[in-house]
Image (tube, rainbow, N blue to C red; front, side, top):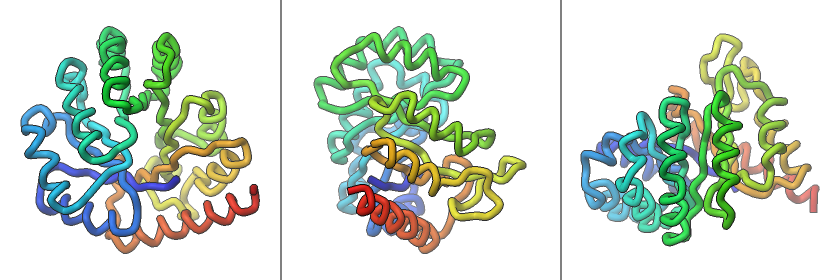
Length: 244
């Protein structure tokens, strides 16, 4: 129910970091879109498989426009080889219309590979992305809800509850009033991730929470990542026991 979002850019350094973190927690693997276009599938996947690594989800990052075509199938193949349940697809205003044009193809591909495609829209396109998603029945398209530096605890909870049946992942991050990323437990943060988790569980949320530090520029040593994961994992377990 809890995982960590980590970047794999093909480098030995990122591979070693992922290997160490994955010993303790499941991963959402974030991979730069340009790498996915430039490198062969084997060049991306084989180093991970050679280390015995798997992933809960795969997410392209950066400008994903070049993947909104036949290249998208490579993501689903990668997810399949890594044992991932879903592919996370960022949605921005710059490529929303392009995505809408290919959603029928993506729906077919998602069904073929038995993978969820979790749209992760920015706030300004959330409503349009949800409308486009609801045109397709069958459970392929889902939602991933992510905060921004302008988010609040209340907003993150409300957005998730509004679309509760379609959400497969809620990203957990925290920010100072100035917008800088901080740890989940930081007293400087304006979001209370523990309250987010508590309120969503109390309302029946039963999918994934993703610790999302690195997307916002916060790269902690693996030992601190493990500490935060274990702290939140224990909190989750205690809440689940109380709600039984």
